[in-house]
Every structure is written in structure tokens, then in C-alpha cells.
Image (cartoon, rainbow, N blue to C red):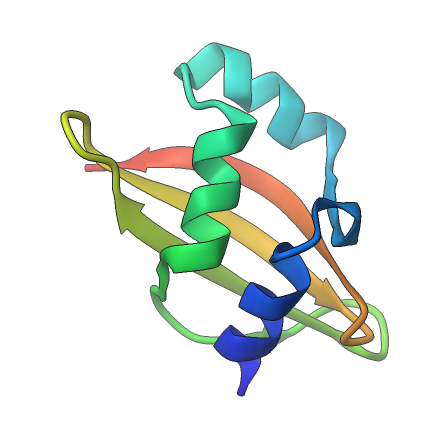
Length: 93
């Protein structure tokens, strides 16, 4: 259910917000926001889904292999089942 909800929300980019940290990592790690959005829409959950700091928040990491590159990890927070905040992006090694 969590994964399907996240994917449905990511179908409309207005539901996906980027933290300042994630925006910094895009440039530093040569990962585009387009790649990250693709990971959110097509990736699989890596690790556990855990409760966030605030009520109604759930944290998870999604991963997906980018053809010709490596696997990308995107750490997200699902907020009250209405939007997704991308906390960071990283290459999985």
C-alpha cells in the first residue's frame, strides 16, 4: 500500500517536494531530479518503512538501477498521505 500510494502521488510532480539537502546532492552526485522522480515512480523499497518525526509521516528509501549507470537511492518522507518530500539522493554501492 505504501509503495503504491507513493507512486500514485509521484504521478503528479506537484506532490513531490525537494529538500534543500536533496537539491545540493543532485549537483554533488550528478543525479538529476528527473532520475530521482523515476526512482520514486518505478523503484522498490530498500530497508524498512519507519515512522517519521511528526504524526502522519513515514520514511523509506527507494532504489532503482539507472541503465548505463548505477543504482540510485532516494530517501523520502510520505507526509499525511498527500505529498512526498525527497530528503536526499545517492548512488548505491
